[in-house]
Length: 381
Image: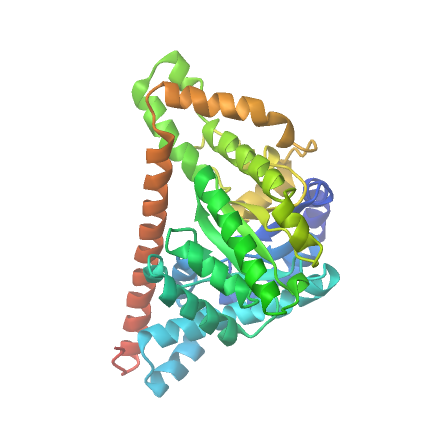
């Protein structure tokens, strides 16, 4: 539990971040976090105004079994399949978190107070199945502040358009490339246009685009280290920030264009950039690097607990650290390319690996739940 002293000490940097227009979302959820009051406490004392989940987070939470024993026993007695059991547990957690965050949702007019849940990662390359799953998840959670996470694969793009067109708010995940990010924004605008054609209230539809950060540095830094030259080593830790800053530049361009202006007149909401994967992977870097250096209005930073705590303790929020850095960002990525490291190859690899990691985590979760159901005398199919 967070003490009053700790909350007061951590209020400065997190409040400053919030005041700069960055929404702080927690990148974690578990039954224990909900029932212990920890999530409510983070909302009350740490400026947390949203929650994101993914298959890896649920694998860690449910795989431990803590807090899920009673529901697992009930599901076992009912003889449900393992897939149904997992969906019942994950949607229960998201529904409970959405209730905790509902006052934030109301106070911000739906902008924040959001809880995200991802479609089955095994559907990442199947458009129609993704659409069907998104509709089912929205129905199961049955809360206005839920966001359905859809991966930004090629198959995911038309799914984003269709789901937004149905009036369902979407968190687009696993974005690594600038080109794909522009395609995501286009898919969102197309979805809003479909929703408008149906007469839906555009002001009730929200979306964020989750642009992954630290994994870009991990992959490019590895290649820079192999090169080992002074020029290569000097670029370590710069590609991810450059990539994210240029994503924000693209966001500014798209949401100032004529197509957006027409939708804005119908009270549509901008699709905010969300900085994901903000925990540093390299211990040589400051643990708040991807928070301190990605401050810009109208963004979301979703942080794992360790990054949230580090920011509260020693984050250095010095105002907007994004919009003045576009020229340097382009120069940094160009320098990486000049060393023979292909940007396109890196981001394609990261997308493929991202989908594969979530598929593995989901399968691990299914295996753990299968074992739990079987231990209670039920064969899960």
